[in-house]
Each structure stands twice: as structure tokens, then as C-alpha cells.
Image (cartoon, rainbow, N blue to C red; front, side):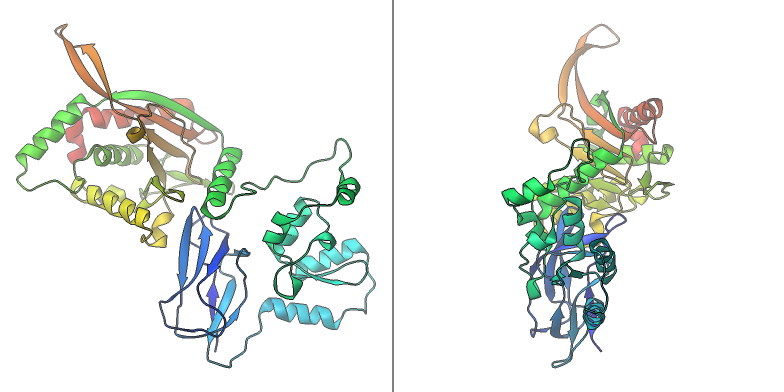
Amino acid sequence: MATEIVMPKLGLTMTEGTVEKWLVSEGDQVEQGDPLVEISSEKLTNEVEAPVSGVIIKVVAEEGDVVPSREAIAFIGEEGETVETNRESENKKAMETQGTQQVEQHTAVDTEAKQHELVHSKEGERIFITPVARKMAKEQNIDIRDVNGTGGNGRITRLDILRYEPSEKAVAEKTQPAGAISPEIEYGAGLEGMRKTIAERMMRSVQSTAQVTNQRKVDITELMTFRKEIQGKIKQPLDNGEMSINTLLTKAVVLSLLDTPEMNAWFYNGKYIKVDEVHIGMATAIEEGLVVPVIKNAHHMPLSQLGPEIRKVTSEARKGTLDGSLYTGSTFSITNLGGFDIEYFTPIINTPEVGILGVGSLQKELAFDDNGKVVEKLKLPLSLTYDHQIIDGAPAAEFLSKIAGYLQDPYRLMI
């Protein structure tokens, strides 16, 4: 019996993925674990591996198609085996009954929505179109009879809609009257791959949340003294990030999230969920864009475990070898631009989280000590962006003060 290769669901918010590149073709022999296809979603490109050994007997989704999570994109079976997809079954039934019904155009559109790919034009012509392409055409007020399909059997794909350029006549016929509502904007239109995914997620984050940013500097002079003392007293080398500023800051954030459970939460599809576990997303720049690998269960990790784990997941994310499950599920994220001499900025929330902390470059400032003597202070700029739908300004300021409190009393990080 044939085995389905499905579009994976890699996280809470993933509902669909894009088939970027097939690494195999129909008829190829594959072994269990072999990479079959590259898909993109949730800010990353991920490979789907063969769940069993066998022959690729059918490829359902073409490159460029957007497929709902857990829907079949291919089948593996024995050589010579055939399989009929749900779409083919539905199309066959539709073609058997063609010509027996006389329907208006709007009825044909409703019928097509149920049959996924088969559309009847007013002239009786059969038009094949993917569900995503159909939706895009409807949103952009494009008559699919004017679009040339490049998929199998002339099927219209998402890429065909993106490439479509209406003629002057079509533009004149479809110009909306004054006051009409324009179709929904497609976020990331004109972009491809990870860049398109990032654009979609960032725009949807801004459009669906009420983002406000609080900023302040934290005096970490004592924290730096604390680091030096610990490094001098422990005989074994601490060269795996155990006492890095990033690790100490992350620990302070974790403890502050435990103290402020309303910040360690998700707001998604109208549901606000406080999460007991603390999973920290670490924004990481790679050549293709930005990814957010996750430190799972960071609240259970002492500094000796947290530092190496941060280094491990960010390093593997840059190499492209990180397990796909470690790109999703974060409850709060941290993004650091200190290495670029940025002092303050306004990070965008990594939805469905309700907050994200931006870290700036370390600043040296002169100040008076208790005896009136001029001393040098080391201060760390922090920028906290939060969803004002969930968190008000005062609780957000208090959360930022808790982070500062842990950094200014660093021995508490060891408890």
C-alpha cells in the first residue's frame, strides 16, 4: 500500500507550506531517510525525508505550489503501483457529470470551490487551478480565463497568478468603481522563499497586534565584576558560553518570565494562553534572512547548561543543520543587534508570542559614586516590544525592571 508524503506541520501557527524544490522525480528509488523535497514555511527552508523505502510513484504538488499542512504532496510505493489522489477522484466525478447541468457563473465558482481544482467557464471550457491560485485570483479580481496555466494539464498555479499581467482591455473592464473595497493585500508579493515568508510573518505581526516598545539602560557594572570573579574561582575553563553576557541576560529573562507569567504566553486566533514552560527564541541572522531557533525548557537549565545550549542551537541554525522542531514553540524571543553598534531599536513581535526583547551595544558612561568620585559605568540598552492588547505599559515596565534587577544583583542568577 502506498505511503503518503505530507506537507509537515512544524509549529503552532503553520497552516501551509510552499514546495520549493523537488530532489527526486516520479520513478526514483529512495531509501528511508533520504531527502525528497525542500519546503519553506515559518521563516525557514526545511527538507522532508522519506518515511519508508520504495519508489516515488506519484508527485502531487509541483514546485511553487502552496499546500495545506498534513496534505499529501507525493506517494511512495512499489514499482508499478498506482494511486488515485482525492483531487483526481473529485475531478473524475466532476467530468462524468459535465454537460448535464446548466449553471450560472457564480454557481460554477461555488462548485469549483468544493472540487478543489476543476472550474467550468461560461463557455463550458474546463479550467484546472490549484486552491491557492484560485483564492489569489479571487482576491486580486483576476479572471482565470485570462491566465495561462503552466502546471500539469495546463493547471493554473500560484506562480502563474503572480506572473500574470493583465492586458489594457482587461484592466479597463475590471477597474473598480469609486468607493469599492480593494482586494486584500498579499504580504510578501514579489518576494520568494524565506524572504517572502519573513515578509508575510512580519506584516501579519504588525497588522494583528498593538505593538509598543519600552526602552531603558541597565547598569551591568556589577555583573561584569561577578563574571570575572566566577571565572577566577572555577578551575575548569568556561569557554562554551556559560558566563557570556548573552547567557546571563537570557537567564535573567527566563527568571523574569517565571515572575511574570502573563508575558510568557501566546495570543493566537483570539485565544490568550499562558504557558507554564519557558521556551526562549534566539533571533539569528543567516545568509538567507532571519531565523529564530528555540531553547526548549530554558527554565530548567542552570548557566552551565544554558550557555552551551544557546551556542549549539544558534550554530546549527546558521549551518542549516538544526532539527525543524527547534524552530517553533518559543514563548518569548530575544534579538541582539549589539554587535552592529545599535543602541536602541524596535523589534517586531514573533507572533503568537506577546513580547520580544531587543539588546543593544554595551555603553560606557561616566557617573559619580557614593563618595562623589567619577567612575566608569557599563550600561546595556534594552528595548522591550509587547502587545498592548495583552500587556499594559506599567506591567511591561515592571517586567523590564525585573530583568534589570537580576542583572544588577547577579548572584541571584545562580540560585
